[in-house]
Length: 467
Image (cartoon, rainbow, N blue to C red; front, side):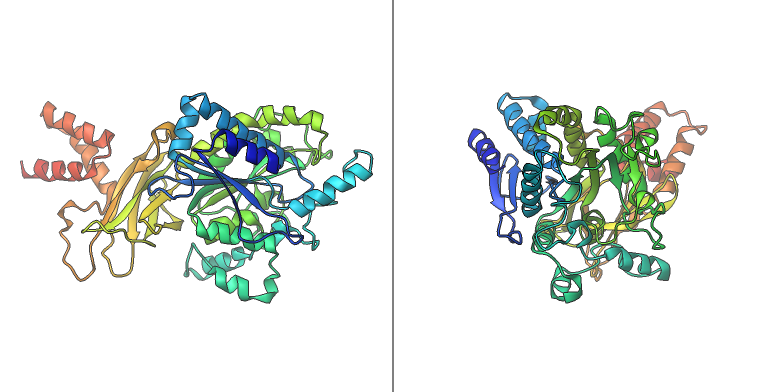
């Protein structure tokens, strides 16, 4: 593994950086990451960050191997001046951790060698302390579900990392601590955790609200997570097709449901990494099960690579969907930790999961196509509301939506504020469909609607009413 990482860095030194997470495994092995971007080692404001994590369960090796192949593919195609790959690398900070559980991989590999090339279903799944790392993260779902039941409380960034580190009840493993620090230290937007044993793209929530072993448990971003999971499954050569299920009973025939599943509907996973990402950071993570065979022979790896290579690219592209922008003061100074609150105006529902702007004032909010009202919330500042139509095209990037915040002790001119997006759009449509015949004004109005020029639209409606 290390040889492949080193080789990729040697071939693409200007766009790669090798680094280790800040904790080693139980047995002292590094958790090594390859970063791929046009400016390695630096967060560029306005450029989203993405991660792939493989081999969390040490005996599930396909993810580890295809991530190594993926980094080779990105390097090769970048050097060949492939336009799509250059776009991705120039506009995304990509982090790839091929093995989160190197001790488990060593155990699984040694067991297979001693068994004459036959893998063991469980050997090496856990870390060297025999702890399942995908049950070892702080269970923030319990906190979230309690807040939901009470109708109050935060809906994001639920627990300070320092509290989790000090609580002995968590029994956090060094590999878990390393990844928690990694999540907090980098403003990840999108992530996937690669597993094996089935063939499906799994999305939050993983832990059921009721505590039942199986129950569909939607997150506030259920529609977005379904779309993200489908972006992988649909680009995979088999996952979304009506294929033979890994579960011989046929109970889990994921191919008949498009190759995706809600985690809780499959089986409840409290303390999982997927839900932790969503509830403790701005990062949306899904879990990818890459095949029935957890530790296939090396001869099968080219087949797995061919099944997944386009899906890996397509999922990565989704980091450039939704909206993004900056939260700044009137003097242009970045304002961090501004809550970005979104209401879906098609359904009329507030999406009860806010994201926060980062240290440089940049924020990223994944959304499906639709019509949204977006409002800022920050103590000491007036809220600002804007309207946006999201029509995702990853190669054009997320819809840009910036906010200038005014201190709450200053008066605000609301004449240009977009406080009610639905009313604005309705009034505009009424004007277009009304009795007025000023074709020039109507053409201007239609253009403002099409280009999301909401301040211009508001001014137009004001002028229209004065006629």
